[in-house]
Image 1 (cartoon, chains in turn green, orange, yellow, purple):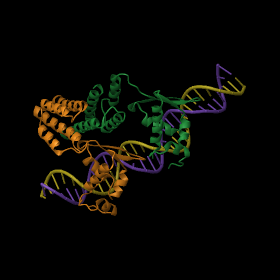
Image 2: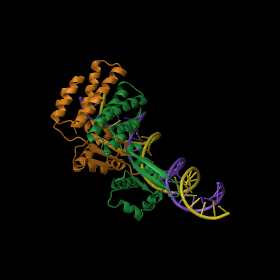
Image 3: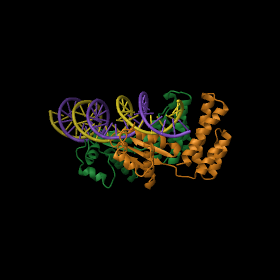
Image 4: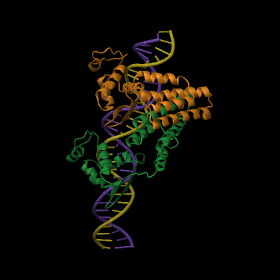
Length: 176
Length: 176
DNA sequence: TCATGATTGATTATCCCTGACCATAGTTAT
DNA sequence: ATAACTATGGTCAGGGATAATCAATCATGA
């Protein structure tokens, strides 16, 4: 059970419908990145944790779960005196780079869950419209259904086909 | 046998000829989407189930059977603390005629050529963006390739599958 | 009557958050 | 130099809170 909704917590939560510590910290960092012109921000883990009235390792959880390469971020850090955490937004100069990055993430096999998540992230990043996302989900479901009902394929085989289809569709969009 | 038509169940059922739990929940969510200006609603599965006096997994059944991408919806969710279910409406009510017309044209089987021409027309009429058309063409081609190379299906069987996939994708976009 | 749809509950999977313990970089004393 | 000290950040396992899945059963409608 959370023990202490501190003043600081309230401060960062002001006016917001933010029932969730992790989401609050995520939003705070996100806002920092937006407000800076530079594509990165530096933080002190301890201070940030204190300002949200939580344990420092909570910051690691937020970084690990939210500021991942799949979502377009890199994190650097240093321990010891003058330690820091730096969060960088990945910038793609060429459409090719973006594409390669996405293909790496999809890989040779992807579960419905993972595909679902990826599409959600891509839409949040503005790389996909809601309608485009819907089309892709329909195609993936159809592929999975066929593989299961009509051809009795293993889960892994279906996930392989799914990855191929997903990559083709994203490839088409990113280069369009 | 359903055990307990609770007060809450009655509440959601008031004035209605609603013999069916699933339909009642479907209608409730649908009404939520209509009453909001935003095209999405967030729910707590447990609470919704409690308010209908049913088991939580019933909510999953309603979502899986009624709020599919083929019907123009996307569902996002998160487990664990502060979990939620969010339902997004992507497509809006369109004249039924248009959809029926399209389904008639596609029919039970459609060649790549015919599909190609149909998509072209739909794009010209502004019912499809170029990117959306591209996505559909990629999915159809992938389906055809799989059918040919991996499963050695007949042309007709492939065209049947293709028609099904095409209808699903168009349905998702056009229908609510 | 029979196929399909609806409902349940047990089990499993995932997420959030904490705190104890570990690792590393810089600073200071000897 | 080097060892000890100080100041950071990282890892991990566990508890609590949700949601998803699945198999079994029941109900409904053609």
